[in-house]
Length: 361
Image (tube, one colour):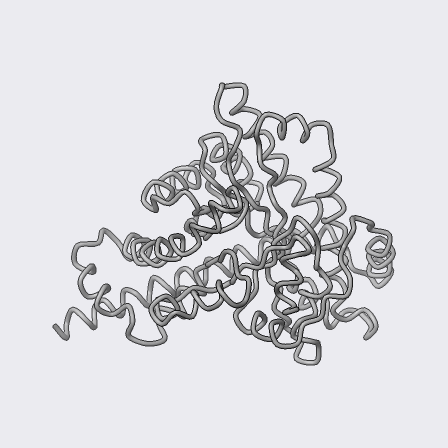
């Protein structure tokens, strides 16, 4: 059996961490859905920057919309949502067949709003309304300022992908925001069903400590963080608090493994996919990782919620001088700054292209 199908049968969804207009036009995304068990996708500013910058696929749209757009940001959102609507429509049969568990796409709010709660809430409303697709998540970072925006957005019925989570504790804070939003909906007599995922970033842990730990601890911290968080996730799903919400019609906020492409050239391309095979989760894969796993991935174990190995491994990292809590905060801050850098670069590229194309016309 194809390894992708094995993960699907195990209960893990595979989503693509990429989108381009070329991929939509030439049938590549359709192929991944039909042949590689891809049941959703995620996007971010870096992905769109590469898609818009590498080639001329978006040039006609940029030329046409530049003069009428209020800003480069509004132009980008319009371009991105055109692609994401098409992708959402491709995934719509999966969304319906899975009872809204799968078949989602994701669109990020401006990372400039990471420390702006009110601005994040308003941006989520606008993207949700403008997208006009039931199976589109709005991505809000799980920063301290983002958590109230996540709760309020869930309360308003906006599906949310909580991004930039790096630890068990950060995941639990995001889950609490989701639970409060659903509980408030029930108190207000509203439908309890609002989709959400919580995205835990994996590989950046190992990049951060590569030069600070011995060889036998290389590429093992991200997996230990994932195992520890998975235990907390399964405990939450078995809690009395969650069971009450589930009985009222709520859907679980699924745990999503993000940043699962291997950064170490000496490590297996499929390291994180194989190590984090787990029921009730999602793994969002860069295209290179998807192809590698499809060709030679192995599914020989799955997480079961036992974090004994993770606790022992995290203790070894602590002995090596790694402060997990401090590093989680650092990674979240650095992740937010990296998104801002990508966002500004993307908007500058659109402005440059728009000016050049308009002048040429």
